[in-house]
Image (cartoon, rainbow over all chains, first blue to last red; front, side):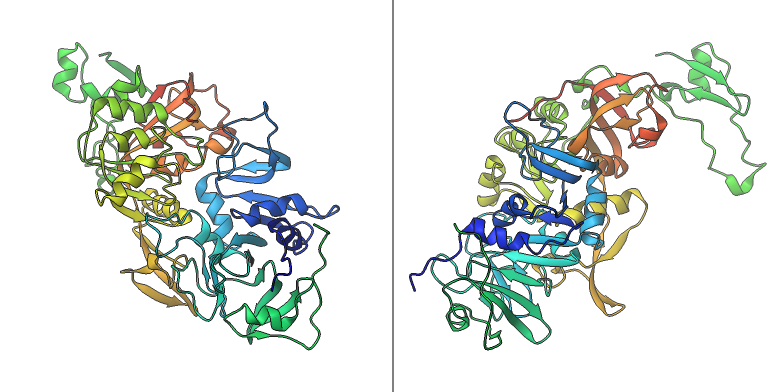
Length: 225
Length: 277
């Protein structure tokens, strides 16, 4: 199967379409971080940064950086109108307490039940970094995971049960990959959309967990790369 | 050592921790005062009225502010994402050379910056952190060599455990980490149909924090995202030491804008911020 899959930017662009107007949103590292650039015009989204910012804007321009105004990744950022600062306690009152409408995290594995593993590769050396991911995963009103559909070695990342250290159990609502949009529903994983050029059967072949799908599954609408 | 006696009308207060005994007051030429109220008159408040033990909180140097910190101390350090780290106090600890420290901080340094210098000097034996971080070179070397004890804590739980300690709550049930390796060894309970694990309050001997501005009483205001863990750590330590860009007279900060009230602050030292690249 050598058909081109979605790029990371296209995954982010598709994920941005899931953000409702007025939503308070936290974006994780990697692909999720790219989502901010693709929020459709006319949609107002307020970004939360777990180091204590609500109303985080784009990166600061060179020469205009303020190193007391950084995101959780140390990148100097800007503020949008109506922004607020607060302590770490309040930052996670917002995450864990269920006050954020949508959170988007990266994933290493997602299980059929919506368990997420995204903080440590079991074979990797080192301590691992939990950061805010566990609080965010548990508390998000709606959790979207964006990731490549398969690992670098081709093995499926959407699995029956996660083998990597878990971030949280039964927390994921929607998975958006370079091949598909999949919802975690009471009956299991439901294939909502497929990438252009791929059939539901193609996607199932690259997914360990069983996918439920109708005869005709819509194709993802994505901007040309 | 100045001896000051104030008569507030309500009660007379002997101010100065270096002079709390009647004998010391007398030898300084000051008549000792009866502390108000006599405890036998209000037995239900026995012990509630202690002489105000106020000492000048402003220290003249970073080294003086950390001069009594012993080997083996447990210390919290504010800061997140490069902002709000008490880098001057950390370097003071490095100069002082205390060892066997147990440290509590979101991150574990960037090269020699932030907590990095204390790891490089091998002054730390135990770590509680949420995100050691990719730049924490000396931490990672020592962790991989099995030389450090580490407790990895979800970030929101790290600060909530401090909040609980500061608020006098010994432990609390939390949904974070249920079913993960974070739950290992912790009591689990189902409350209203949902699974929770029991998390313990977290305090320290010292908190070292950074704020933007302090008044001489110890009221603190912060700057932008440099606030992060600093306010909660101030509530959760036996002694809270703050480094600030500027110290202003008491009364000159707008009470509406104060984030950390002075009751949580013990020592204040002025030190220009150090940015770690």
